[in-house]
Structures are given as C-alpha cells and as structure tokens.
Length: 309
Image (tube, rainbow, N blue to C red; front, side, top):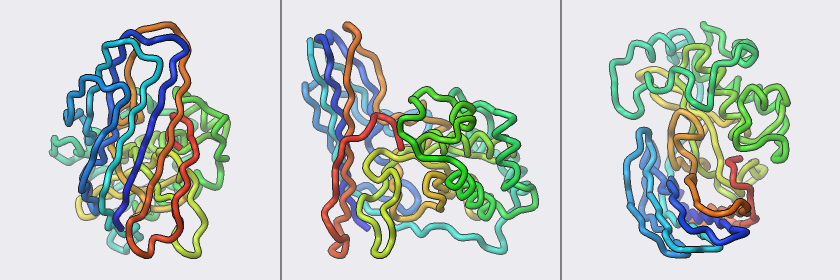
C-alpha cells in the first residue's frame, strides 16, 4: 500500500516568543516492509533548519531554530511511502519467551537496533513490580514469544480503557496501570515495562495508522493522531516484530513506522524549548491517505492532542 501522510503541529503563544529550538522527528524511517519515497517540511515562520541528523536510536531528527519574535509556529511534514508488511503470526518454530530473552542477552550486536539497547529500564519506563507481576501471566517462560506478545497486547486492550483525558504526557506507566486507562503511549509503555521485566528486548515505536479501515473492519483507535506501539525482539530468525496493545493486534501494513527508541523521550515527534512568557496552545492534525486505487473513501482530519494515541 502507498500512503501520503500529512502531520501538522501548530503552536499558538499567548505572548511573543523571542527564541525557539525544536527537535523534529517527523521523517519516517526505512524499515522492514517500509520504504520512504519522499519527505518535505513546511515551516511558518521559516527558521534555521539543520536537516537529517541521526539520533542515537532509529530516528531522523531535524533541528529547527527560530530566532525572531513569533506568536505562532506551524510545523507541517508531508511524506509519501510504501508499506508492504504482513502482520506476524505464531509458528511452531517460534522461540519461547525464555529462549528469546536468553538470546537477546547473548547478542553481541552494537548497532542502534541491537537487542541490548532495549533490555533495561529507560528514563521514562522503569521496572514496576505490579506491572511485572500482571504481565507475567501472559509471558510465561515456556510460551512461544509471538503468541505471548499477542496475548499480552490482547490483555492490555481488554483490561484498560482508552481515555484521552485520563493521563498526561509525563504520566508514568505505574500511574496509568493503576488507573487502568490512558492512551496508546501509556499502553505501549506498560507493555514495554512488563516485557523488559521478563528479560525481553522491547522497543517503543512512534508512527501512524491508516485512517480508512479495510473493507468489513472497524476503524482502528488512534487513527486520527500519531500512534504508538511496541516491538519485541523475537529471536534471531524472526527479529523485531510489532505488537499494538491499544488495538490488541500484531503490526501489519496499516501501521507506518516513524521512529523507534527506548521510550517516548527518544522519539517524540516534536520537542524543544522556547524563551518567552508562559502560555501556549498546541493543536495536532494527521492525515494518512491510502493512494492505491482501491483505498476507499476520503480521509478525515480532526484535531488531536499533542500526545500519541
């Protein structure tokens, strides 16, 4: 499937901002089953842009500097890409959870997607005993890793309520777990915390969902905003596979990978600082338009919160 993705973030400041510096991680990455054809940015006001810097993880970071007074900042990215990825299924030859954990710990790789980078607590995802205990029910050591990952995604979908007002950007996995509600960012970080506690390599993925559902299927939650899900390293044969705990499914061609890191802090679509008086409003709008002839109806672009989910 070919997609056109439009992602606009608008900041309106209550008072003129004298200086702003932002990290933009809006350029989708080339990944397994995914190829980026084109990418461009539109900025208002136009600032100094240092494009295409590599981050420590799998993210392409543009650095924006606005050094003159402004009362608004509009950042719009447009991408065209092809996604040809089948949602993974369980197979009899899948390693067990214990085997996948042992293999991840023994991998000598040192690249950005080396399992060792994703085995341990990260700045925003600590190890929480209550999450580890709850997730352990699905991550039994002898269970196949893909079966276990999908079962845990199903359990989170069934056991937690999607509620965009329940959590904030800095809500910890433990707080979202205790509330049993949140958005895709919260559900992904809960799953990652539990998976790492079981010894698995688990990564946080920032990206998008297509906004037009396949024929006969319901529209997926999170389709009108940035989305977040989980990748588990499932052994040397299967590698990194995606699991979406918000929608209780494995990741196929409806998911578009933008960036991969340890947690939200590594891959936030837009972050940075500004100098000025307090008071700002943020609006985010996302379009994911299938370009194939059989893609179906037009997409909808409602405003969304600045958070993934």
